Image 1: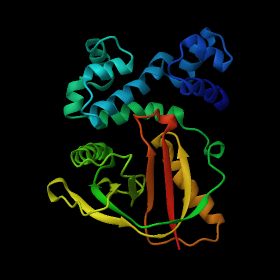
Image 2: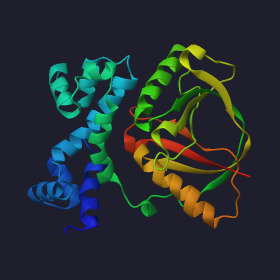
Image 3: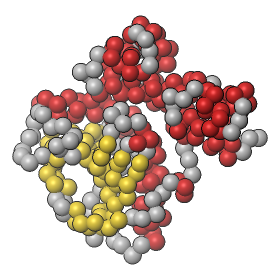
Length: 285
């Protein structure tokens, strides 16, 4: 059986730069091209070329679903295809939908099943990545416009698309209106029908909008433990568990009656997933 160190070595070589060719990736891993390809496929059960292609397809799927102003042709070029037709064929092979069909009505269940492979392969020992320093800060109250997602967490992306469209219509870009999420429940232990997740942006006036399910709330003033996560969302849970588990247990702090919340500092697909920045806040007494 191959060691976890070998698996980490070759998957890290791919994650470091998905634009490199196979020769470069093999060199980064300290292996010949032949052995890199065979070892990668043997350890992961997936060809390295497909492993490299799937993150680009993931980015394209986000652009299709959440960046409706980008044309399919532009997304095809951005994904590395010479034309929309070849991109459409490749996209349909992966997701079972054409780009246009996915844009209109994304099948997120199929999407999640496909990307579970990448999520599993890119999972790493959090002890190597946890920021040792947890900052204690005084958070100042902020008014937020909120789209409340309620129900199946696998459909959260449908709510995200609606919220993005509402923000654009109301000229509330992330650069001028900070983006927050309020995490009420852990999807691992919460029934789908009971799951709650708030999509929020900072505003300075009442923007309640019953037609688009927007309500006004606030994140209150108070002490918080803050830790910065750099990387993809699927590693956020481990960082949150570290904060609420190991760190909090070892601290002398008391929890405040307000959920953990996130501030999205930089977003995918504007930046690569490994460069995403998310600040995690644990409210304290």
